[in-house]
Image 1 (spheres, rainbow, N blue to C red):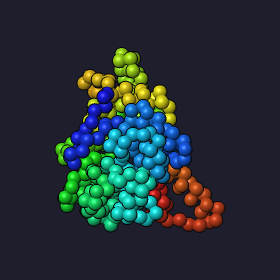
Image 2: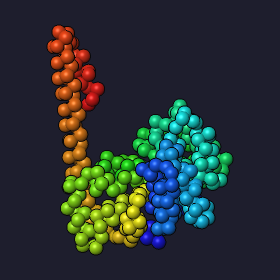
Image 3: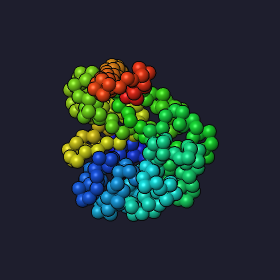
Image 4: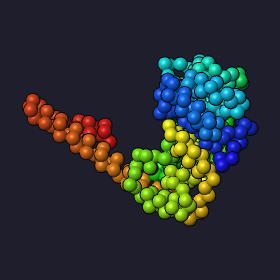
Length: 315
């Protein structure tokens, strides 16, 4: 297998590449795409209450004729419809048509209501009831995990986060903290530098490495993610791309390759941060101009401190 299995702190083993259903929607199209992923060798499916396609995952599993034990299913508590964790997990079980899920995550720390310790105790009950083999979190930072671990009886098995070279410096503290506490990092949007931020500093090293290794740039990015010790969550409707992502597990990057990608990623992160800052500044200026224009038109005097507060709202 080009992508190995990782043993979670719960003792269960998880495939290190997953097919994500975030952007699929629902209906027959997603079912066909999930079946295609199964046929291409993806036996880890990542879905969520909030994606609205847990049912499609269950139907695809039935159509694939794979046994339940051959597939690793991750789903997430997304806080939809005001449902609490005990109710949401049972709905997810019913939607997927399986007696349990392999990994159940809290989708975001803001969904841990009324607080993280209370929500995590409910997650632990999910394991006790046999509805999930492992439990974890998503988008949690260091402080969030510190609060959770202070009262946890069961450690989170995984933390699924945004991870690619343009955010690696920002995410490095949580990656390090997770490693120190035996929590697996799962990376979503690993290909974002190519799909959302093309023509950036990463282009040069990715193209050079890809040419030298006879690979594609997206394969190199996935190999970098794997080298950082993260499980990859990715997706595509095209079988050829899924095959390429699968084969990326065989690519071995040198320390020099990883360092070159890290350096380009840090440079890109600075540029992106600066661009976002400029955009927010421009919006703030526009708000100020509009407010001043309206006040002038209606001959209204405005407190300068109030204008400053209005502008700060978009910073």
